[in-house]
Image (cartoon, rainbow, N blue to C red; front, side, top):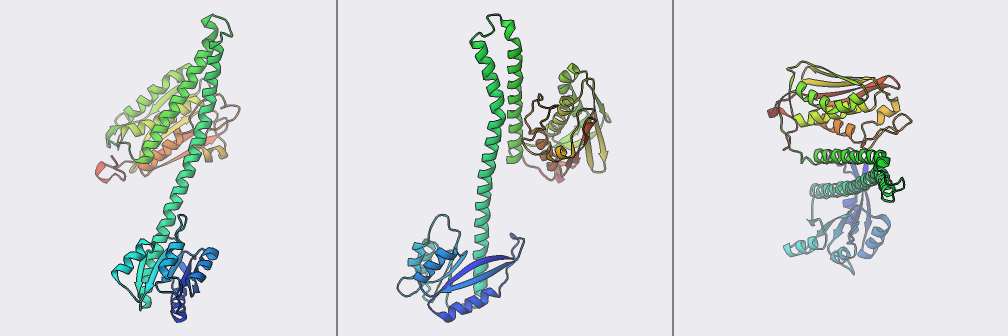
Length: 383
């Protein structure tokens, strides 16, 4: 049970005890919170005593009488306003007026409760205050998570870009200082390596743009009836230059007329990532097989390779952002570490899933399931 620390401030002991008894017997259930909410109630008979308890106990909810000895409730409100506080204040008074309510709200009170009040009225007001408290906490938590994610993202991005930038800078300095003489041919390998590094950074930027468009919902989706075999063939043709260099065969297994309601660019992103990975992590003279098949209202895309494979531990990590498997067999293979996380996000747009079956040294098979839904019942029609 989640407990709301509550402080009742009133110079009438009887009123404090009535409120304490009513709230300690009150259990609140809200759809925003998984567990029931209860109340731990303490009391104070003056603003001075309340100020000490607030400093020591940091209550979540304050029920504050307007008229107190020495300092008033409004005086106390002015002393307890601080930016990091999430405490919600309900002002209580027997001298209710519109002006009093406005003044209390301006000084930080959330709501106003006119004395005398019934227990049910108290509980309704407290419920609204607790809902506001929960919402404020959720907003703060989201802000903290957002800052943390942003920090982690920038840290990882800086780390991923630092290495290729340093490499290109090193090659340029060697060429600038003519370390190998004036013959341009002597620097050809450095030029080639620099271009490879730059292409890797361009791929990372492209993947980042795809990822941010998907996450923000700013990518305009164009759902139409598309021939998946043609989309797959386009992705295969994109991967062919690298595949042919390594004598890797890439074969499509699909009905030539296989169609699906989808955004063709999204499916092409899936196929581009899976096929390019199957080629990159393959052996020379290896094989890549691309399968398209229908399973009820779902379409399954499967890409199998005869490559280096993955361990069970690597399979569990592979769909996370910026995850690249680094070992003796992969350390020379460039990648952004974003491609498979993008594949997963697109699959979720189609109420689908992605999984991998792999064994070290024997290759991998990636399977993506996508729900085939016409535009009028498509689960995500953003754009």
